[in-house]
Length: 241
Image (cartoon, rainbow, N blue to C red; front, side):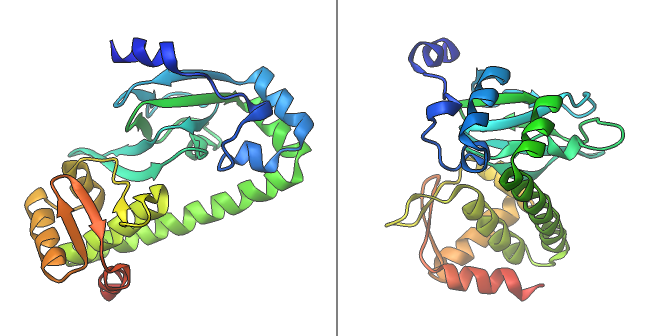
C-alpha cells in the first residue's frame, strides 16, 4: 500500500531540469549530456528496506540515489555488516567495477527512495565525454579508499565509545543534520543498525550513549540524537587512532 501511495504522488526527477545540486551527474556533466543521460537511464521507486542490488549479481551499470538513502552491506560468516551509508546524489554499485564485474556487496534502501540506473556503456561514455565528471570519479574513488581505511581504523579501536563517536561522525558526514540549528542528526538507521555499523554490541552502544549524554556531548529524545559538542566527540573518536 505504501509503495502505491508513493507512485501516485511522486514525480520522477528529470536530469534536464533537476534541482538536486548534490547529484554528480547534474554537477559535472555538460548540459547537452544531461539530455543523453535522461534518455538512457531507467528509474524506479523503492520503499524502505528494499534491495537495490545483491552480492554476487553481475554488474551491468551503476545506480544513482536521486532521493532517499541506502546502506551498503557486506555478508560475513556471522551477519550482514553495514560498511557504508549513502544519501541523495551519491553513486552505488561502483565497488563491482573489476575484471569479474560482480557485486561484492549488497545495497538496501533506508527509506523511500528514487533510484536511477545507468548502463555501463552509457556511463563510460559520459565519463569519456565530460572531463569534469572523469576528474570527480577519480577523486571519488580516492575518497572511497580513504574512508575504507578510516573505517578499518575504527574497527581496530578498543573502546566502544571511540567506535561509536567515529561512527556518528561518519553518519553526519554522509547525511548531515535534519536541523542544523539544533544539531539534530539525520540518523536514518535504527540503534540496532547503528551498533552494527559501529561494530559494537547493542548494550555497549546504549552504555556509550549514556556516557556521551552525561558528559554533555549529545542529547537524546527517544530515537532522536542531538550533538551538543562535536569537538569533544571528535576528540573521543581520535583518541584510539
